[in-house]
Amino acid sequence: MKVVLASKNKHKLEEIRQITDKFDIELILQSELGVDIDVEETGTTFEENSLIKAKAVMEATGLPALADDSGIAVDALNGEPGVYSARYGFDESLDDWGRLLLLLKNTEHVPDGQRQAKFVCVISLVMPDGKVIQARGEIHGELTREARGEGGFGYDPIFYYPPLGKTTAELTPEEKNAVSHRGNALKVFYEELKERLYADK
Ligand code: IMP
Image 1 (cartoon, protein in one colour):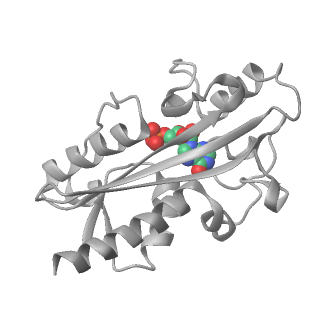
Image 2: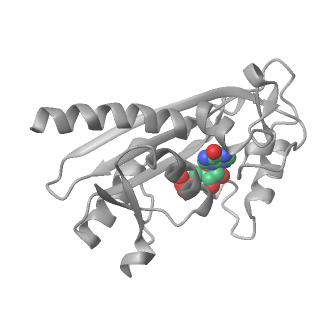
């Protein structure tokens, strides 16, 4: 099945493709179809935003479209930055590294033992007939006090995953996919997809 990815984030593409390659899904980029849409993420939940992005790309291409909306939620900040992770601080001069430093600064006061955080990912597939498949994945860990590791992207260097004793930036891509919010969401998604395809036959 050919599916258009509603994202321009190269890191996400690599992570998603590694997993969808194992399934019967051929991921196509918007750019390969000459489509270039930046959808405004006006939702207040990962579910809403991922659906908004997938729907817009399906409508523009006429093909099934897959979108991921993800972010980091910090317990001590009541779940912030959450859906605003990519825009944390609402300061356009900040890049990923600047936002990571801002999150460290804003959690300086949070004592060890209370630094729990999670990454959340919601995957949506919107079919040309309007059918939707959605799946959510999470990974639970803790915020470190300094960046560690060269892998991954975004907030990975400050997200410590206790079961492996490393930040998600210190994991290999395979290790990260095996435990990550995105990997988990894609596994749930694929199970759902198989069930639906079977049910539609
Ligand atoms: P969006 O899903 O494109 O709206 O943005 C998600 C934002 O959350 C990214 O820009 C990252 O800052 C953060 N994020 C999502 N997934 C990950 C991950 O796997 N590692 C680190 N940061 C992530």
